[in-house]
Length: 326
Ligand code: SF4
Image: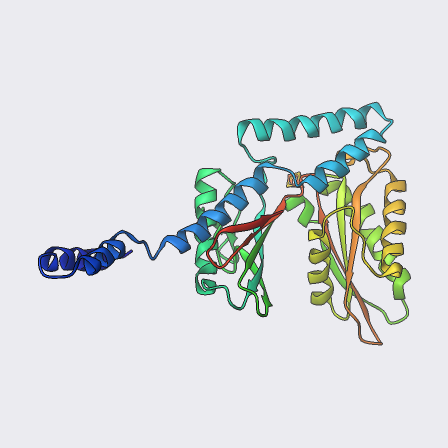
């Protein structure tokens, strides 16, 4: 609420209290005590809490997948490393500290209902929440202004944090998803348009070549998100979408599901192991998302998440009350 507005309401209350009706007095009192900024503050608070929870707690699907891999591990070194990972997760929770020192570059995925009343405020609310998270959690200031090569200090910069919008017709809800893109796991990201005859075999080769060469840098076990489409940006965007899909779910297309399972088995057979120190597995999951493609081209995109994949989302209703969290 602006000072001018408070002053104006106070003025009315003072000057007119002797002459106006009790009902009007009540209305003026209500106006004085109400806060038009409250929904905006609630919005920013909810996004701050999302960042807080996501930086400190591992998503339940990632935690369960890691537990499963630990159970199937036979090498003493790999078991020891899983022990360190779970000790790290436990201590982060106990101490209210981020799971990893690299809290990533923040990326937001917004599903905006066309009837959500505060759409104009979402971008500012996200930036305010990011600034607060940088100071209070704290998360590491990771945003370096491109070309200037200067750390901005508050995780805000040109097009940072990254925001992707999806419009949801006839809905009054807002869902904000966050992904904390660490440096090591981002290093393995790739996107390429394959030569016309390379086909699906080319997709598989691209994934294996990349993970074999770069997977160890990305703090395995890895979540592998694969996107398939016509051109490099489409495939890249779909690979990130795949990464955001919970582990343990499959693509509904039986052919895509079959490819997910085969690639997962093949990558696990390589035996990269936890933190790249060898073991019985390499990945917690392989997810594929696709779009129909041009007859001459298939493009493949790859996004990789580390063992400390941090992502989450919050859904707010039209009153900016929390409706659901993931
Ligand atoms: S790859 Fe993941 S676990 Fe490794 S340093 Fe980066 S954010 Fe942390």
